[in-house]
Length: 434
Image (cartoon, rainbow, N blue to C red; front, side):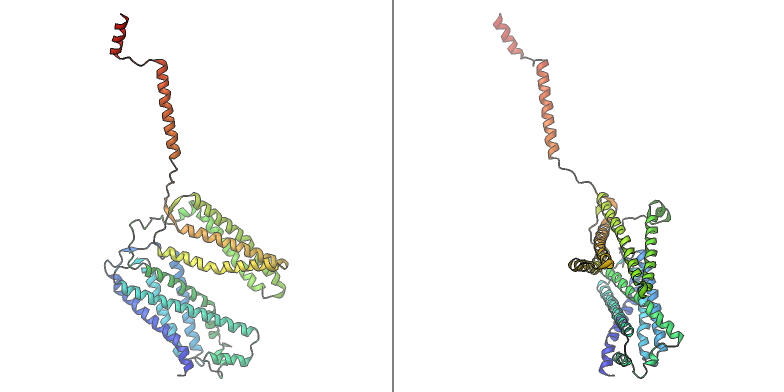
């Protein structure tokens, strides 16, 4: 084995070792440790919601299908690629299935036994998820670079050099392309389409594993579960939730339609301007509505007083962190685009539309993030008590009013009746007169 092969196999060996170690710990936890009585005295009801778990299972199924397509592609292209690469996707299938079951059943658990071993196992699993996500991101970037080079007219000798760099046999470069085999084309197309879902799965599973790690040994108060009312069809119709769902669904369908038309028309020279106008027109119509809705929600949060839930909550802290980090990229892009437009000026209709898009995007992202973060820190059921106003003025006013009443009473008594005289004094007065 050459030094180049060792260099290429080192990351794969590390990933295989981490996945094997994670699988061993998860089997031990699921089959033995989690079944002990008293191992999970508390449950974090904020972690692993139903929607999150359903999306996680969907992404897990698509990632497993991606691994199946990868195995099929390796088998079909076995003439130019070694068969020992099949080991990695097969182990990855078992790792994804077992981890999804672990998160589905135990993502809410606050584990109180074997805390050191549990924390170590969860951290190894988290490292495996992050490395698999990073591997997917870099492979996707490399795939995009190869596609761009081929679209720009890459020469055959450069393509052979590229194959040689990635440890492929230059003499069999034609056999490494799916030219006429329909099975190979199906595997290759499925691999390309399903590739982004693997990145989303590893990112979501890593977040849930981190929340489990934070909840190890955590003790919750009896009022942690707020007793939220379950979402039923009656609540959806009577509570006005149906209007939000219908509006969001219409905006989503319109956005998908605009995206498809934009992708089709932008590649055609005579429809390119129409594609840009459609793209900017849709966003300039939707973003003001979203900004107004976020502002209205902030006003509702301000006037509808509820208790500020600022206790220790790993799920909420991670949500706020991810929301802030993911918004930084779009905020920076909108800000620098706006600064550049103000510095050099706009040119034509597209320049004006791009400036308007940057300003509205910046405003919408700020309002939306503030609205979501405030909503995450509101108690769902307990209303806040009004703050008592200052009573100094009231006390002074009451004391002055009481003094005035006493003074009025004394004056009234003096004007109507005289105070009774002492009997001794009356006797003395009568003696003097006699």
